[in-house]
Length: 438
Image 1 (cartoon, helix red, strand yellow):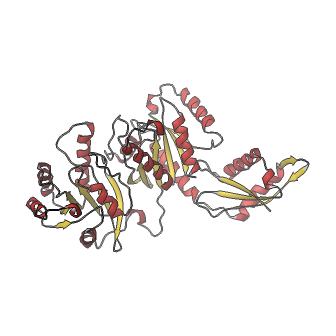
Image 2 (tube, rainbow, N blue to C red):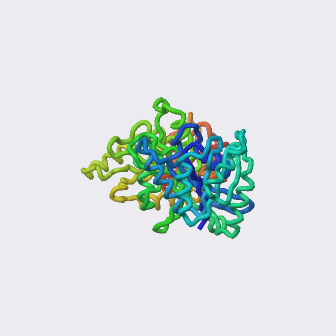
Image 3 (tube, one colour):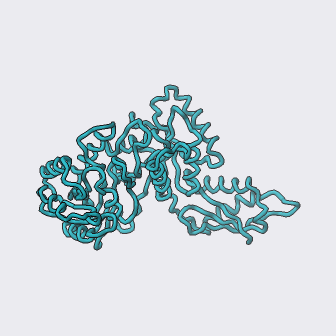
């Protein structure tokens, strides 16, 4: 297994800043406001050819001022349990606080490697503040600045020295192995985090009925029932005019970025409120980014009349038209209904996205269909299509060569797309069709 390194400490000592610095890009949201990071956030770091997984955690506190403080502490202990090495981050701009002592007592009880990491040394005026933290009793100590990277190289050298014979990173267990990335997306409170927790059979991510509970996009490796993939829990995407604070704005931006970085998106829709305009907006974001799509009508255990499911599905097909060739599952995290089935379908779509159809096969199948149902005459001119080919793009794109490409009607383009979907099973995959002069 990949080695796990957790960054822990009290709030606002720079954990997320260090996390972003070590993985090489801004994944965790950084803000001066306390309690921004709530769940464990995972990222991958490579140093001198050695890979390890880094975990960003919420700030530990012993004062539970709101519903999230206790859950953040639960995530803190989960991170300690699964880690091989722990970076205890402290801020020397103040003297040692009571909470620092409490965290150190917890860490000393663990039979694990602990590094005391003294952060923000670039802002420090009194050097004696550093030596004060030696009282915490950790033998391995490092002084760094996560904001400008000072000292992080020495810290990484020490980490990889311990992990110098690691197993391969889970994303590359086999040479060039493709592991699909599935983003769980939707409006707030449709059950995204609960779905992932149910699949993993543990409290991986914090769940509550409060808007904005999930802030970062959180990745986790999933391997069960013959399925191997990376699940991405994302923040709920609300309309722009409903976003009231910067933290939520950045959360939504991260969620949209996760859509762009995924292979397939599982769009959760609340079975009680139905498919709203914001659900359609998210659907269009996924479609415009050419990602695979599956619709999950979640909390279906609340639908008492099964006949309503047929009506629900028919209504959704009408709303998402013309791209109606999308798998729709009625799911329930509570009853674990259709969760594995939807994941297996998502995996099939992810691999289908990579499919390249041979030009000879494409022409052999599509040209007889086109010749049998030709484009209608335009001003007495016959419209002919003599040749077609798939473009070398990540998502399926096809080019058809015609004598009058600019005169081809949208209805005929939809006819060709429909036939492509029927013959090559592109269900759940946005495809693009282009016409060029032969």
